[in-house]
Length: 132
Image (cartoon, rainbow, N blue to C red; front, top):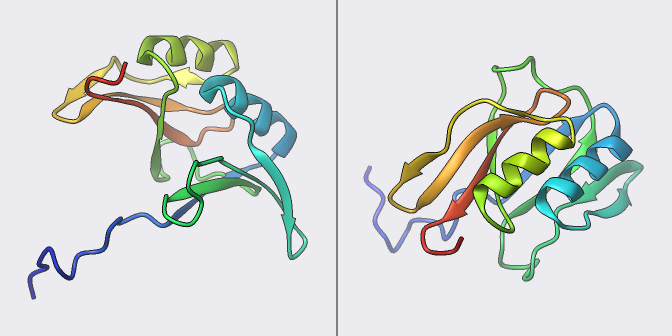
């Protein structure tokens, strides 16, 4: 069965969750790297911190939650939008305790680099073509 544009979803991602053993440290890390203020919440007894988006009802996003990350190199990679130049975000990531794993990679839509947060979660830092 082939997917047509009329039956394809608007987004293939609806939500992501990044498990971290120390929520306070993780919030500080992602706030610094992405220059945002994650939104702390407790839903049904689960402490979390949501990544802010302008349109919560129509834009995919995600959250940090207390948990155990997959062993380094074995989990999914979540690509996160940089607020400025890729190199500036990479510098903040290293200063905040993360690791840059690759040189910037160009794709038709922008540029990204593979990284790890301080807990070993795979993340990508991404900038759109023509944005920064």
